[in-house]
Each structure stands twice: as structure tokens, then as C-alpha cells.
Image (tube, rainbow, N blue to C red; front, side):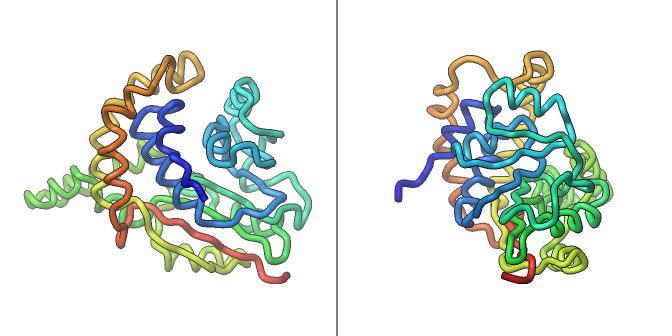
Length: 262
């Protein structure tokens, strides 16, 4: 089976730092079978599903109605439903799979969201998520540099700043995720790290370069405009080498949790 070059596809739609992160997510998620019916929880503008699901049927759900309007305008998947993860407007046992890509770390009431996800999953259904791990802060380049200089308080403040910038409310290790899932009636069948420290360092260095893209998105409703092949030519090889390295303590986790029953 031919491997999809997710990085090349995401570079067309997003700044390099974000394309790098989403390509890593997609490569991790591609190792999981996603059965239908499928709920794409926290779908946003829908461009991740547009690339990763590549036309597979899925219902997109997001709290931000403007994001969903943008998804519809660009023809990115659908149908779309505006609702929160803590109150999913579907019947019990509606879905075989709930996919939440880089979403649950932002949810204010995580336990309520997990209970709702468990409710709308069929018996034997699966929740498939990617989230930043408890190692995310430690593997930041600036954090490592500050701690090497003995500036632990400054390092901790930097991690706090980054978590606030990305609105990380729930950043746990696998054991804590297991406890939260169990409390909601789900059991983790698979959990593994990805996004190695070398990739995290490059991602962090690329973040300032994404500022113009953030302005573009705010003004035009999209991250980038114009051809993007030159970005891949100049930087794609470096990014791919970083992503291919082993991730024994990756900054992100891929987790597959199951609802009991068949």
C-alpha cells in the first residue's frame, strides 16, 4: 500500500509548523482502523479531515460555528454540527468511532466530554485521540536551555506560557488518561508516544515564522494563499527526517480507547 505524504498535503494548507504537527498526527492515526459511522469531534475548519479522511464520510462537530461555516465554504467534508463536546446532540450508540485530533487538551470539562463520547459510542466502539503528553513542556527547546542554565523557575514559567498560548487544559501522561477514561466507562486498548524531541525542537523554532499565517487566517479565513511547493522543497526534507526519528518519550500521545461490549 502506497504511503501518503501527509506533510506535502498539509503544507499546501497551513504554515510549516502546523503542517508538521498535523502530518505527525495523521501518520500516527493512519495506523488505526477507523470504522463508520464516524464522528470528527472538534473538526474546526475541517482541513485536517479533508486531507486525512480524504472523502470518507464523517460528521464534523465543533463549538465554533464560524469555523464550520468556513469548512462548508471551502467544501471540507460535512455534514457539520455546531455543539460542544460536553453535550453532543446525538442519540446513544450512534457512532462506531469518535475521532478527536488534538482536541481534548482544550476541553474545559474533560470528564463530561468523555462521558458524552462514551454515550454516543456503540458497544465495542472506539475513541481515537491525539493529545500533547505530560512530556510536552519538558521537551521544549527553550525549557531545556533554561534548565541547563539552572533557571528552573524561568523554565517552568515558559512552559506555563506555552500551555496558555495553546490553551492546554488537559495535558497528562498515559496513566492519568487511563484513569479518566475508566471513569467514563472506556478502557485504553492502545497508547503510545510520537513526535520525538528533535521534532518538537524544530516545531518550536518554526512557530514565530507562522505569525503572518495567523494574521492571514484572521483576515481571509485561511492560513495560506498562493503556491506552497517552494516550502516543501526548502524545508520538507529536514522536517521529514525529524518526524522519522524514534519517539520513546514523544511530546504527543496516540490513544485508542474502547467501549465495552460487542
